[in-house]
Length: 574
Image 1: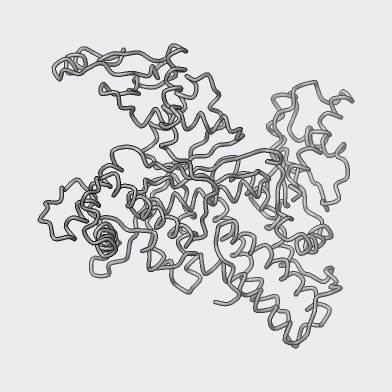
Image 2: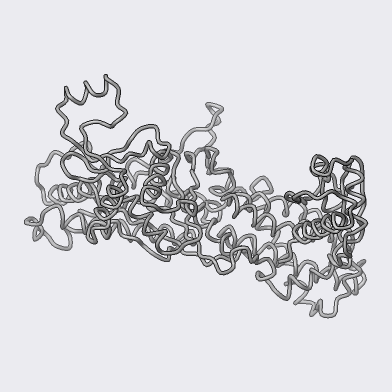
């Protein structure tokens, strides 16, 4: 996709260099050339403020702008270039160029919108990565949707993308899971067992135990918790994959945490950090104050293995291996990220909850302590999300009752059952990750323009309806004369051409929600056009109808692509 703002930026830079060569501008290092749509449509389609150059050139911005315009080469996509006080260069796109894009969109389909900024580069997005100790919760769901949308946008930007799930099946939580299922199984056999309050309480484990009792009877009595851990893990992970598939999410790779222990990578990482002078043994960290030291002495702590993370900007050093020889979760996390970097990813995106903020920083410090550059690692932090419904009696939103099946949390399966896969995808994506999210289960299923899911999908549905009627009448848009299109249709195409910049910004800033914003903005432009610009109407001349049908065919391609970028379906009817 041609990004017109970048083409104009290059043209302006060339004009500045020409003015410098002519001696009309002093010699200075030309800064970034920001070209973007102006705030008011009356100012054109693309605008550059020359005011930012005044301090370099020591000239009036208006004079600089005039020098630029005098030397700008002709650009076939521009109709007019005007200079406006105090120093704006305002450009209007050519109607001929805009109409030509309609055929281009139809001919190239989704490839029309593909960028090359990631060409030849590899990106990884690691997301969900929930422990296989239970179903996908509502919090995991937001993580899944944001991560998958980020991967789709990176692909649209030209990157080769790998979607990875860090399969965290080591540690105490898996021991507790195994013991929980073992006790539930024994209860199914009639044993009078007190179930610990800190074990997994969900109904799903009772169902799993009942299935084992039906299939094996009491033949598993002699099995220890490790057997039940494996059984529970397999069952939970199959459930996780089914849930994710229900909203069109699949991972390319599942990285097993236990492999870091089996291959001894965690100890190799520790040795490298120690060799680089960043590891020490002590009962307390080196910067501890008198009160902290007294506390550790009173509790009789044995020496632990510490990472001198404060050398990289951390607020305090971190324990890597506890006094009993067990590693903290920080050590395998660092080893895992070293492995990521060694796999050659140009970009490695992690999607995490905000409660992982400190841990993510420590991991980057650990990567630095290994002598590696953490620059490829980027983290999208997500705020909390909850499902809510309006309580008319109380006059307020309240959290949806907890899932009977899951025990103590709402699940992705619950959300899909209450709403739809498309509703889950859009509403989990359509807020900035930095914002807390209330998922209104009543609002998201409304068949009205109040619901953005319906609003955006209905744009595609309306196009599909026009095509069905045209087919029934044996009416074709072949050979359409696009010069007959009006300002309304061209307004839509103008907005469509901003999509490349939206994708670029979403990828560069790791803000996948930007695509959801754009889809709603484009739908808001489309629906009034649909109401006014009729195709198969008795008062519409056949040649005009043919041109309009061609326009709607291009619009359908655009909305289909937007819906797929968000992981949503493009229904033919609603």
